[in-house]
Length: 118
Image 1 (cartoon, helix red, strand yellow):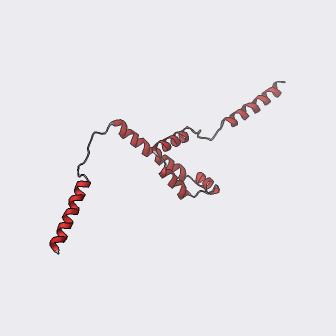
Image 2 (tube, one colour):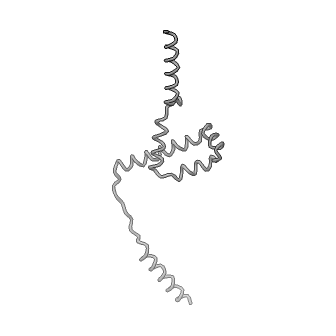
Image 3 (tube, helix red, strand yellow):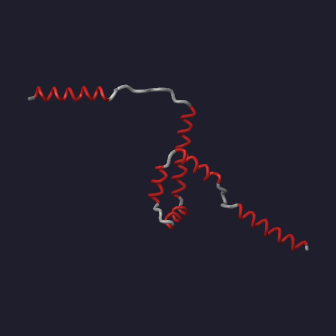
């Protein structure tokens, strides 16, 4: 009985060795690949920090999205999506000034100047 079991185990192991190759692949890593990976990690960290901010967390909760779900969505994003959103965040003005606010300010200044000179 032991001999029959030992044969069975040996055959299963030989089948596994044949099915799953034991070789390893090693190669050189280019600098741009390493830099891309580091940039992807930095962008993902930027998004995580952005989602952890108090104001954004409150706005997400007002919209019905829990902070844990937002973090899970950031984790599920691809590197290209994370890089795109991180670029958009970095392009935002620091004070939150939009084009409409600048246009409205110019109109108000123009009206004041027009009535002051007149």
